[in-house]
Amino acid sequence: MKSAYIHIPFCDNICSYCDFCKMKYTKEWIDEYLNSLKNEIETFYKGEKIRTLYIGGGTPSSLSIEELTKLFEIVNLLNLECVEEFTIECNIESLTNEKLILFKKNNVNRLSIGIQTFNEKFLSLLNRKHTKTEVKEKIDMAKFIGFDNINVDLMYALPNETLEDLEYDVDEFLKLNVNHISCYSLMIEPHTKLFIDKIENIDEDLDYEMYKYIEKRLTNRDFIHYEISNYAKPNHESKHNLVYWNNDYYYGFGLSASGYLENYRYDNTRNLKKYNSHNFIENITKITDEDRLKYELILGFRKIRGINKEEFKNKFNISIYDVPNIKELLKSKMLVEDECNIFISDEWIYRSNEILVKFI
Ligand code: SF4
Image 1: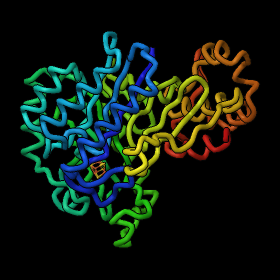
Image 2: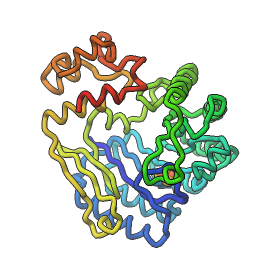
Image 3: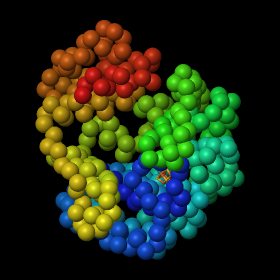
């Protein structure tokens, strides 16, 4: 069994902070892109049963009903008879009832919706187009149609954001009554509109305060903080994202997608012309046993429960205590352990990067 990610790089609207591989939705480009995607899947997919499937972007919901219908025909080239989790990313403004029904008909069982904030001044700064009423209406409709597994993205540490602003957003997000919330601190990346406009990241202490505030509010409402940026109600952790953090294999299809299969990691081209001339893969790296172990640590410690000692031993044939740096990190209390697992301590999880780089 494998997992698969499919990238749809088109968006109705370009957000001012976005450095993903995306482009403005252009009707004339979609057909050719979908044909290339079909060709890529037909060329590289070996027919395994797919356990988790994630269609991300970009904004997959920006496609029209006809285009989505064609996308699902392509998706059905994959063996989905045992699929446990099938997620599609959506934006509120392009999510119609007709599309929700189409998703349901095609066995999508999880929606991931980009919201980021309800605060109007930040919505306009981020160039996001929804209103609070629209968000509530669309999520209610999705639930009515039968989607009970919904993630929403929340963004914090926005320029000049105060703790009161964040409190308002967290209140509104909780009112949506969904079972998964991903929380990202805004990072202003080069080449984005915010960067060009010389907008700066907020003070790091405030960023930390906001991180802790979100953690406290969500865990008080029965969300489990299971990964640095992710919270889920019990049994609603993202199975697909856990594939990445568990260092398991997955296909990546589409422009800029990455995959990890049979000891090779690969990245697809970010160049649409190249992709459409079926030069899909930009680079492939052979993963040695040593690389595999490093990935296990770097990805595994992103999970709040960290790494299971027994599973690690079975996978790598060595004790995790024999991995360089582990004993020192335990001694300094940056890592802590219980009977089964080793994980980053509460005090360090916000600064986990400082620990993770030690394994590179
Ligand atoms: S919708 Fe998502 S992918 Fe598209 S521009 Fe905004 S953040 Fe980027």
